[in-house]
Image (cartoon, rainbow, N blue to C red):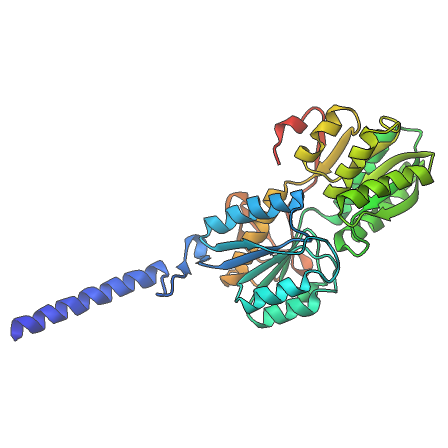
Length: 347
């Protein structure tokens, strides 16, 4: 009996040590725990783009976002509407909330339309990260901005000015949806840039919307040239729009006569840069944007940050970031692609 008691005691001690070791590793017995840097493992992270099957979001979500979620041992998913519209994302948010999603990373089609659903998701325990296009600040925890709106606006006006040349002329903007928060902010600031003396020879004559639909964007580009025969340049700060406009110009008599710039991915735009349709365009790395957004969400869901100004967190290979005013985190400055460098990139 004495030997049996000693054996039982030893087994109990061994189990206690084993349990303590698991606790130190962060395993709570449910399959979730704490990994490197205090980030919880097993986090359910869902990406909700403006629209699925958009090349830009395929890169941001399914490459960058998925890579990050894999690194911190979470569970990745992507869902969303096939067409970009203000209210199309609401039902997806509600479903993700009901599924107990820990982090919802969303690019908003409208700054207000999805706020009610996002607030309910937050009340249910989800952390909300907006990226690419923001909501009203009170509807989310953090906004991961690809670049400052001022930086993008200055960049776009600079590129179209250089492309058109010193004589200037009429220009137009081919945007995404009329309600897209980021697009509208950039357009407002582009108008501010155009009002400066150094840009006085550029005249904005029209702004049209392709709704991030390839065919509609193509038709809107065609319509601009029919409506404004003296048009010298088009700015399209949307990956779908700029590629569609380039496709139209490359096969028309306006190729080389009407200049085009905007925000596009290298893989979309290489052919049009190489054939002379486009001199230069800009973007950030969308994979890095999705990667940063995922890490920001993980830091929120792990209690490392709350979204307050001045807080810092580490985003894997991208390093440390500091949260700015209104819970905004900025990825970095836009990168300019030209014939000299576009072949070096693959996204």
